[in-house]
Image 1 (cartoon, rainbow, N blue to C red):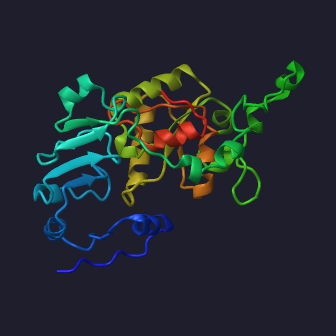
Image 2 (cartoon, helix red, strand yellow; image 1 turned 120 degrees about the vertical axis):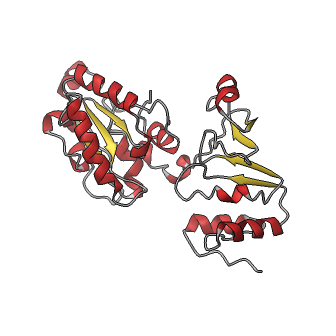
Image 3 (tube, rainbow, N blue to C red; image 1 turned 135 degrees about the horizontal axis):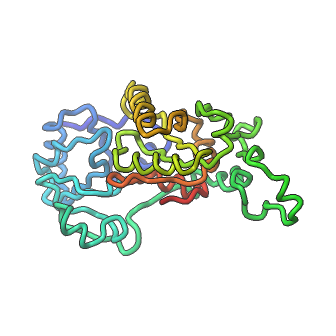
Length: 291
């Protein structure tokens, strides 16, 4: 049978569809129907760009609609799927000794980085918008000792995309006290399901050693209604670690403000077991170092 036409989607989706030799939308087909449709195209290689993330359709690979099946980009780790033949990564994301022990697919290494980011195009305004967000922004830090003595964290800000007042920490509605808003801000904007007890315990230990510091997490979740439950659970865990009132949850922001607002934090702390991917690139583009 004929494949359904692609829906309109976003401007980027339409651009991809227009640039492709052929573009088919399989979202309305069952896994078996989609596998048959792919098999009918007689592809040599089928690349899975999703991995174990939202919208994954791993059952497709079970039908083996292509002779070679590979995982790339959206999930920088092993899928552990029996019919996924290759993982397309780089030596930084998957060091050969680790890959040999942990990744079930055969490795196909990119020479430099497997990760492609469009930040320079989509968020070209971010470095300028966030130029006054850091304690010592390049080219803006006062040269004189007297001027530096008058600088305070309250002056940190990012330019708003709509031409309105600049965004400051208090505008992010983090739920933190003024004292915490003035302190060092650790951040982790991964989906909350990536967090693990070991990493959270290490961050809590850092907060105990830094009495003025706070930890910013994301309030946005791919699972409807799940973020509220996770937030309650994490606040309870924070209390158990002796750092009550030290967590701030960043709400969803307009896309143009999404990256610049991150620059109001000081240091990104990554998860130990399920590391940042795009969120790591977001923080680095915002000028926030990561550990």
